[in-house]
Image (cartoon, rainbow, N blue to C red):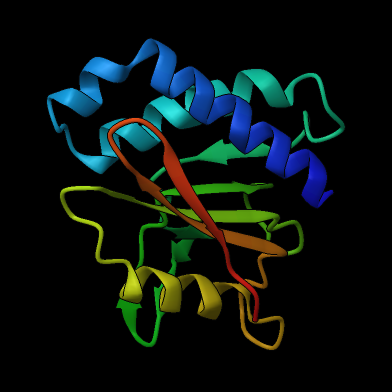
Length: 142
């Protein structure tokens, strides 16, 4: 599954840099950029066995409650999951831009949300720094 995710991420980033370069040049918010990334990801994933999963950005629901890390509400930039359950949490991504690249807190959040002994147990996580011409992808291991 990781190979499929790597391919989907690369395809989505290529589309983002090809079709939405102007957003990067204008330095729009990471929310706008993660939305565009998610749009492309959703298109490409329809050709895979992940087509039945949901893609969400800034999604803070945990069933009917609110996602929390150490008592703080969290809004993951991007998740691949099945809504309404923590049994099918596949991928969490946090984005940063080159003009705001500090991602230490994001990496800690990803690790916490990947921890299988805790509530969410995402299978995969990565931090993506959106640079001017190419993204840096850091896969997170716990």
